[in-house]
View 1 (cartoon, helix red, strand yellow):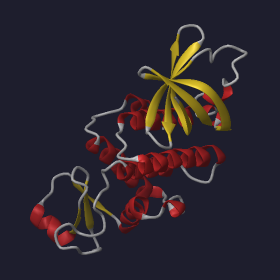
View 2 (view 1 turned 90 degrees about the vertical axis):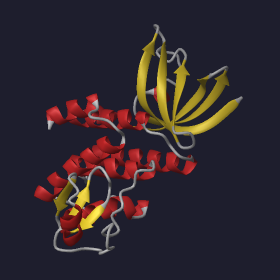
View 3 (view 1 turned 45 degrees about the vertical axis):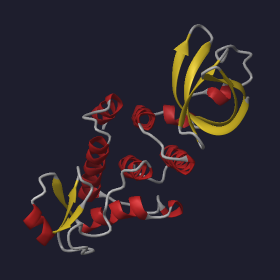
Length: 250
């Protein structure tokens, strides 16, 4: 049975002299492991479409319990992501995280694929800072895979905003200043208005407007630290190897 699907190659593993196993982030079924037979041969017609960070239209055939590439057509290859070690390490981190996630349904798969493609575009073509793209990825991915933080207002009294607001990294809840003093949530951090606005924008805005904001200075540093801790906490991980390597470079 043949299946046609658009997808982005996010990981590859060698298999013998001429084959590869590919992890493809698809628009319908999340991450799918695929065998690319003969892909390292010079004559392979789908070699370009099967490269790492190639976005392609794949025709897959299922044999027993595994998918194989029958044919593939390149839509776009993000060659430039390999030009800087920081870029490549960052998208390697994104790939590792996505491979670890569960996708509730087809709509989530499509949105996460769109998210990754947009980040690759902005990363390689310019226009957005690496740190901002990293935070957008972390918070929006969590929101799309069932871990959206509750930032519409204080979780106790529903106050939209006070001079000081507190965000619970583990709980994902927001507290106004008065309620935080009574609750004393130990994992909550005080965030400024610009950071709160950024978090709300990332998790709540329509996708078409997702990348249409900027953040700089100390606010950007705080957002970056919070989004990273939030992702790790809600995936139940203390670390990702690729994240450690990226952080060693920046």
